[in-house]
Image 1 (cartoon, rainbow, N blue to C red):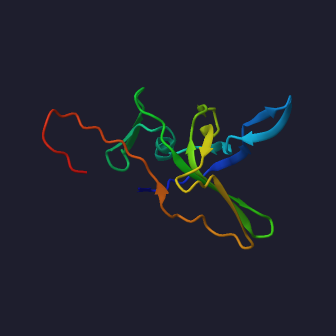
Image 2 (cartoon, one colour):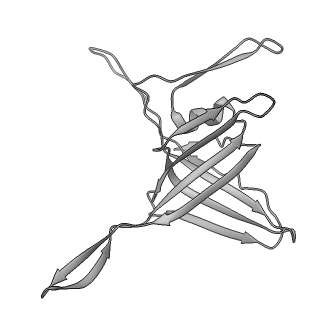
Length: 174
């Protein structure tokens, strides 16, 4: 399934590093091979302000809208039963010469802390970190360099939705 992209317009940092656990295989009283368990990427995001829509993508929960301008409200409710979903992250770094580099992590989960700080006279600063795994096509990440800066492709993103049916009979069509 495909989801709707959510922008972080005042993002400050998106970083990741590839890592892999290795195991030594021994024979004849010596190491004869080193075998990897498969790469993962550890990532972090920091933003000067974050929308509740973006917070929802990272944490899961329920987002409700009420009212109309100028009295509109949005509320994100996170329950202890809400699981953090997988999501895709795409970042862009613009170069002095007019080009850019895009980095994509295909299957991210915030398995670290999700933090926010309200400070007098400053943006609400949010940060989170986690791990990225390979997607269904076994893609972990992609880095693309462009000689001329290009917008991030808004293409479709993976989305997982949980449907709960509390019934004792009948049919349910999705």
